[in-house]
Length: 67
Image 1 (tube, helix red, strand yellow):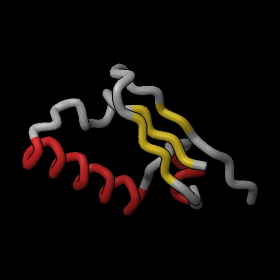
Image 2 (cartoon, one colour):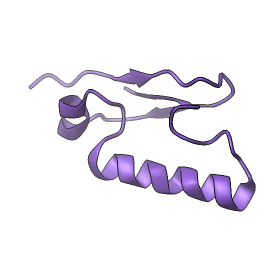
Image 3 (tube, one colour):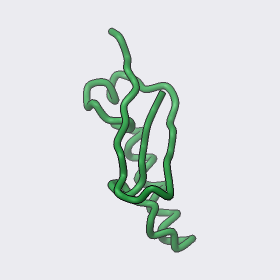
Image 4 (cartoon, helix red, strand yellow):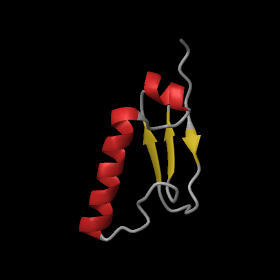
């Protein structure tokens, strides 16, 4: 199976995350972060919002890509 990079453009241009090594779950979902990686990313974004008051750190606002 050929694995390709995926990209989701956020609505806020301030923050972009680049993840590495897309896997089968990302390929099947056609998203840059899926499965456990997606869960871990959402957990990290929640911590950044809650503990550091970084409200712009949420899915849909940030740009996420993998390569």
